[in-house]
Every structure is written in structure tokens, then in C-alpha cells.
Image (tube, rainbow, N blue to C red):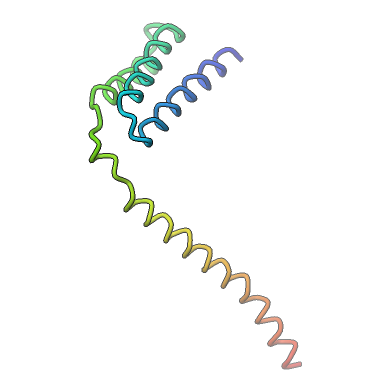
Length: 109
């Protein structure tokens, strides 16, 4: 249970850092991610290959220091919005098709 708690806590800390990044708060992002790294170093067992790999990845992300122009996601959001709308239209058409077919069968009988 304690291990699960530690993993969940780290996941929440990283999620907070991601939210700061999405809000373009780069200094707060770096501070949060750095705090998450330190917390993980103090909370997880030392000399564990999985933990070492995770910490290395988090350090690399923190050192990369994303730039403001790297954070422009409006095109991705527009694409996502159009995909969701298309799925909704497709699903609506799929839901109508069987009903229309059964109505046509009833009319021919």
C-alpha cells in the first residue's frame, strides 16, 4: 500500500507540473518538477534501475527548459476539436442507420 501511495503521490506532483507548463508558467513548472525529483529521491529506494531511469528522464525534461514558442498548441486543439466533432457526427449517423433500416423493413411488409 505504501508503494502505491508513493507512486500516486509522484504522479500527482508530475501532473501539477504539466498543468503549470500548459499554463505557460515555465518558472513554476521547473520549480515543481525539481521538487518532484527531490521528493522522489528521498522517498523511493536508492539503486533501483527503474527509479534511476525515471529520475534521469525527469531531470532531462527539467534541463530541457521548454521555450514559450514550443508550447503553442492551438493547432493541436483545433485538430482535436474537429476529430471529436467528426466522431460525434459519425456516431449519430450510425445510431440512426439501424432505426431507419427497421422502419424501411416494416414499411415493406
